[in-house]
Amino acid sequence: MSKSLFITGGSGYIGSKIVEFAIADGYTVTALSRSEASDAKLRDLGASPVRGDLTTLDVLTREAAKADIVISIADSIAGDYGMSQEERGRINSAGMSALSEGLKGTNKLFINTGGSLLVAADPDGKETDESSPLWPDKQFDTGGERLAMSFQEKGIRVCSVRLAPYVYGRGGSGVLLFLSGAAKAGACTYVDEGAVRVTTVHVDDAARLYLLVAQKGRSGEAYNAVFENNVTQRQLSEAYAKVLDLPTRSIPYDAAESAMGKFIARFLSLENRASGAKARKELGWEPKAEKGILEEITTGSYVKVAENLRKSAA
Ligand SMILES: NC(=O)c1ccc[n+]([C@@H]2O[C@H](COP(=O)([O-])OP(=O)(O)OC[C@H]3O[C@@H](n4cnc5c(N)ncnc54)[C@H](OP(=O)(O)O)[C@@H]3O)[C@@H](O)[C@H]2O)c1
Image (tube, rainbow, N blue to C red; front, side):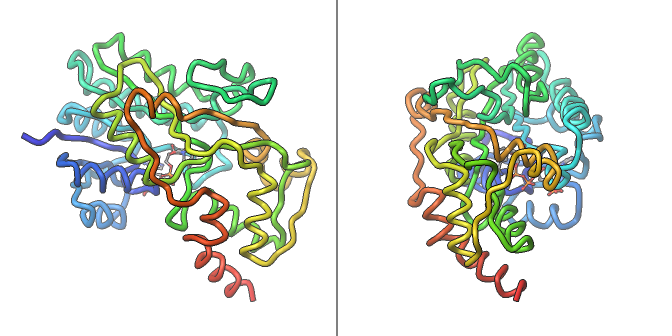
């Protein structure tokens, strides 16, 4: 009999790829959905939508209880980057706890979504891994991964996928947001020297990692979903500038925080050189991206996106 999977955030950029690949792998997928548009998207992918959100705790517990595996990827901050980290953490944690109530005592698998940005940059600029220390002042850490790992005490197996901050490809995600912002502002901004390096992963490769974790992940372990870790913020701005035919502009951190808010300013300022070696070695993950992020922006799926943005700005 096919395994059943319940996913939150399955209508989103990354979640919809997980749903697509899970169905291709033979899973029966049920997905949380907040709207008719998401219902339609999920049905088109072959999943069954269930109406609810991160605050409908009874729905989360009920659906988790019916599933063999739960993937938690919805994030209350998606689409509302002005939300405080406290509020974000409160909503996400309540939703995750409700999911865990449906799984407790079953030894079934809960897959959490974390981020490689949880880990502090190495002081010497070297790569970090899943065992490296976290930022002492928390930065983007709302405690979600620690909460998820604590579910093991309730008789649940738990793994965490730590996504690279730049999940890219198929013309979507953060790159789309930054291209749109640059088109509006008439310049492609980076903070200070733009020298901090970031990690990236193609959306299809990230989705495939979730499915490998579902098959072979070891409880208690986190796995970085990382392809590249040497691209600088300045190189990204230069790629946006090239494809949008706009200038680049450096701004100091304080000005970035006033103009873009704390979340985005920090996102553009933190070095993150996480390694994806553990997932490759332990799970046999093989990223298949044909282009790195810079090439994808200048010659791949973002070319059309930039062309449309240029047309609407003209
Ligand atoms: N994209 C990236 O580059 C990236 C990088 C690192 C980490 N992440 C993390 O990966 C996750 C998904 O990212 P994404 O790019 O796929 O985001 P996305 O395209 O914005 O999708 C977010 C998903 O979460 C759902 N959602 C948002 N708020 C919700 C709420 N309050 N209750 C229930 N569902 C809610 C959305 O539902 P609707 O369809 O109804 O809006 C959607 O399915 C997030 O945790 C994000 O922080 C993303």
